[in-house]
Image 1 (spheres, rainbow, N blue to C red):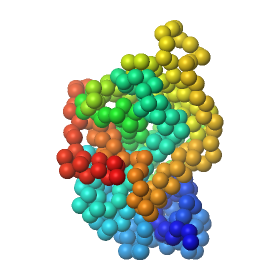
Image 2 (image 1 turned 90 degrees about the vertical axis):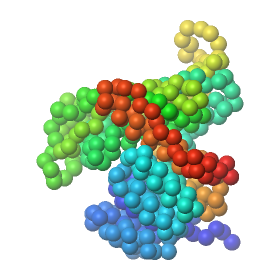
Image 3 (image 1 turned 45 degrees about the vertical axis):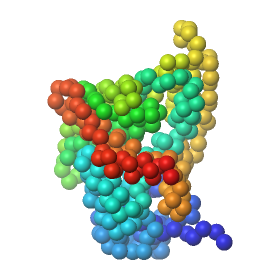
Image 4 (image 1 turned 30 degrees about the horizontal axis):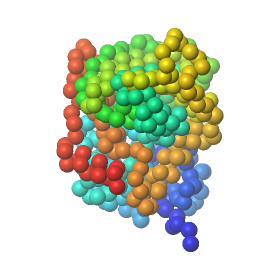
Length: 390
């Protein structure tokens, strides 16, 4: 007999909880909760009459579900996750785990105290080019990691992050938390350490003076590569915009690695470039997969720039959401819930990405002073490290 089909509830049927949500892998969406009736109508069209629809997520938590997916706005993650975990329901929460360090710790503590499974959707840990980069680093291909740089080119910022609540500090803290949590998590994952001191600078330089829609006015076309470029042509942005769109962060990690992160919304292209330098070589990605080819290059010999690196690995385009990453993270989550297997993602790592983003934002908005990143309580660390090693 095959494995039992799992019943999953989805809380928040917007961009990430909606049509981008993968299906299959031995699970069905049994219920969807969203306060927006239009979102529920979209869910009904996709899942049919078998799905339970509700405007109140609390009634969804009363159902016999095997797990819930929390894909609501960032500032609601903590309350919904803690309520779900307290009822013993395994949780998949979209990144970022929370918008504050205390909030992230609350979620981790609820999972620990109830013994309920917690999973955070850091799907970039499944991107083939970054998986291979980490494998090579762990095998010693560039020696001991000494520094990491990440350049994040956000060409579509005016389509997504400045058209709705993502542009508001009260909802996201900053894009150094909301947007950069992926990148910070990958920096930590590649380096084998976590940030403990940060220093940041940044400003609202791109979209601060662009036309905004009136409060209550419907959001217009989210993705429009022609009419939303260049930034001087963008209009209809969120009524409130008070997060930065150009940011620079320096990080000192717990193992001595020095790292840097740059996020820019002026750029026309949209991808991430990670450069990892060890004491015996350098590794770098060009393109990060999805619908485009990605290339990984590794240099181990002294020279001027050589396009023909000592190792070149090509990653062809893949089908699926985010180039198949969402399907892989979804399958990993379901296997974890079903069999308790170890996972590629880390709730503790997700917390560290939040804490780093919060500290970087504090530094940025206080003139660039150095800010300490608080470590989680020892009992939380011990619990989740043991979970990851099991």
